[in-house]
Image 1 (tube, one colour):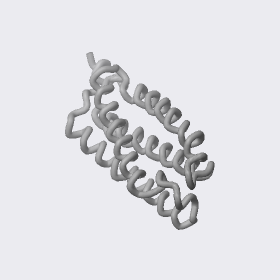
Image 2 (spheres, rainbow, N blue to C red; image 1 turned 90 degrees about the vertical axis):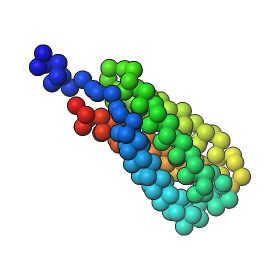
Image 3 (cartoon, rainbow, N blue to C red; image 1 turned 45 degrees about the horizontal axis):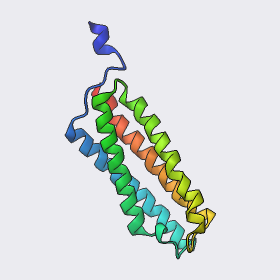
Length: 143
């Protein structure tokens, strides 16, 4: 019996409070990092006419991504035996899919370029890393 409670794969279901707090931390961190990237992009004069590299769209889509990640993680903690590993896999697939438009659509948009697409891709990567780190870390504390 003691081995069941000490098993590192044993995970409690995430409470709504824990998910909300972790999601809020991931949201604040992701928006701050991405807004710093927008600031650097604007300061450097990279793609000034590209709407996707402005604060409004970046903040909106970052928030949508973090909320989606938080909801997904919450569902995984209730439905799979190893939510952290499953979440990392899901996040990796979603990240790869999210990079496709950055390198196919953004370069041909008005004011867009491959560099602008790479910057948007970097925003996706930082948000994914933050979400995985913050959301799975709280679950480690539950063990």
